[in-house]
Amino acid sequence: MATEYGHTGGAGESSALSRPGRGQRPPAFLDGPFAARTWRAFGYIWLSLPIATATFVYAVTTLALGAGLLVTFVGVPVLALGLAGCRGIGVLERARARALLGARVAEPRPLRGRKPGVLGWMTSVIKSGESWRHLLYAFLHFPWALFTFCLAVPVWAYGWAMLTYPLWQWVFPRYADVPGIQLYGDEHREIYLDSPPEIALAAGIGLVLTLLVPYLIRGLTTVDRLLVTGLLGPSRLEHRVSELESDRGVVVDTAAEDLRRIERELRDGAQARLEGLESELGLAKAKLTQDPEAAARLVAAAHGEVKSVLQELRGLARGIHPAILTDRGLGPALSALAARCPVPVRVQVDLADRPAPAVEGIAYFAVSELLQNVGAHSGARSARVDAWRSGPHLMLQVADDGTGGADPGAGTGLASLARRMDAVDGVLVVDSPPGTGTTVTAEIPWRES
Image (cartoon, rainbow, N blue to C red; front, top):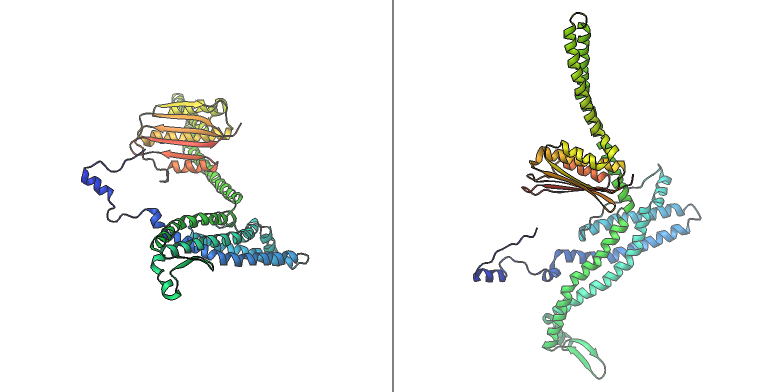
C-alpha cells in the first residue's frame, strides 16, 4: 500500500519545504567521506595488509614444512598445528570483520568425531574441511589485501591532498623555491600547478575523488565480506545439517505433543466414559433378576453411552488421520473440515494430482488448525480456503473477514504451525492488519505419492 506523506499548502509552506530546515542532514554522498562506516572500512583495509602478509607467510611455511616432513611422522603434528593456527587466525578475522565491517559470521562447527588423545585431535584437525578452508583463506586473502591497499590508500591520499591543495600550496614557494607542485619538467620546460584556475581545478578533482572513495572502499570490502563469510563461516552443507537437526527436534517435539494430546483425550474422554459404562452395566447385571425394568433402563442408558463413546472415538481417529483424506484426497477432506467450521467457508482446490500422503497430512492439519482459529478467535462472518500447486510447492491459503491483528510471534497456535512448516522446509506467511481480516498463506514442498 502506497502512503503519501505531507500535504499541499500555500506558498509559505512550499518555500519552507524547499529550504533545508534546521537539523536536516546533508545528502548521503556528501556525508560519505566523514561517515563512521567509511572510516571503519578504511581501517579494515589498512589492517588487512600486515595481517594478511603475516597469515600468508605462516600458512606457506607451515604447509610446506608439514608436507615436506610427511615422509616422517613429524610432518603430521606440524601440519595439524599449522591448520589449527589457521583456525585461530579465523577467529581473529571474524572478530575484525564483525567490528569494522558489521559482518555477522557464525562460528564454524567444532571438530567432530574427535577421539581422545593428541593423535585423535591431530586427525580431527587434518580431516576437518573447515581447517582447509581457513588455510585457503590465508592464501587468497593476501593478494586481495595487497590489491585493495594499493588501490584504496593512494586514491584516498590523492583525493584529500588535491582537495586541500589550496590550503597548503604556499609551502612550495616559501620553503622549496618553486611556485607549486611540478607536473612536468625537463631541461627545456617546467610545468607547475600554481595558477588560480589550475589550483581550483585540482581542488575540484580532489573533491570528486574524495566523494567517490567511500563507494570504492565499500565495494572493495564487499569482497572481503564474501571471503570471510564463505571461507571462515559454516559451509552450506553444515548450515543445512544444523537446520535438519533443528527440524528433527521440532518434529520429535511435535510428535510427542500429539501423543500426549491423544493420551489426554483418551484418558479424560473415552476411557473415563467407558469406566462409567462398566459401572452401569455392573449395576444392570446385579438388578437383572431382582428388578428387570431397572436393569433394562440401565442397559438402554449404557447403549446410548456406547453410541456417544463411539462417536467420540471416531472423532479422535479422524483427528489422528481422517479416512476421507486417505480415500478421497485433499479436496473432499478440506470440504469436510469446512463443513464442521462454525463460520461459512468456501473451499476451492485446484490439484490435478495428489501429493505424497505426508504432504496431504501436513496440509490437512494446517488448514484444520487455521479454521479452528477462524471459528474461535477471528470474529469473521465468512472465510475461504484455497489450495493449488505452484511449481514444486503445494500452496494453501486461508482467509477470513474478521478483526485481524493475529500475531504469529505471540506464542499462539500460529507460532507452533510456523515451526511445523519450517520443519518440512515449508513457509508460513501471515497478513493480518487490524480491522481488515487475516490471510495465512502456507507453502509446502511438493512430493509425489
